[in-house]
Image (tube, rainbow, N blue to C red; front, side, top):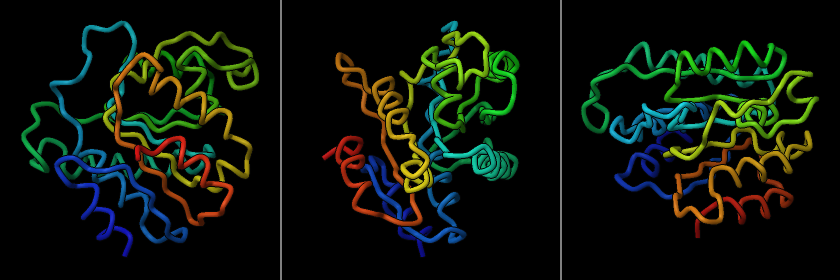
Length: 211
C-alpha cells in the first residue's frame, strides 16, 4: 500500500525526495500529508516577516482537488495537532487553501491573518500571492507579494500527470525558482505524487528532485 511505503521513506529523520505513484483513490493524500506535518519545526518559522512564510506547500492542479486536500489536512490538525509525532509542539498547526475562483484580495487578507503552516494552492493563485501572477491568474486584481516560499521545509506536487496535461509546467518551473533561487542553498524536501508516471514527467522530476 502506498501509505506504508511512503511513511517508511518520508518519516525518516532526513527524508529523501520521493515520487509516489499510485491510482486515484488509493490514499496518496494521507501518504504525503502525515510526513508533511511531522516535518514541521516551529523554531524555523519567520514570525517577524511582513510576508507569510508557510513551512509546507501542496500544489494541486484544480480548485476541487485543492479543497479536498485542505479538508484532509484540516482533519489531521483537528485530531493530532499539539501531540507528538516527531517532537513537541507548543502551538496548533494551521492550514489554508488558496485556489482560483475566489477574490484574490480576500485570499491575500486571509493569508496574512491565518499565516498558515501548510498552504494548499493551485499554481496560478500561488504565483499571484507571491507577486508573480498574471492578470488571468489574479482575475484582474493586483498581485502583491504577501507570500514567501523561502522557509519551506517540504513541498508536494499532487496529481503531477494532471498538472502536465493542463499545461502547468511553466508555472511549476516558476514556483520552483521561487523555492530554490540560484543564490540560495535552501533545499526543502520535494515529493511528486501522481496516479500515472508517463515519460513526459521524467524531465520535470529530473529538474525538481535532488540527486
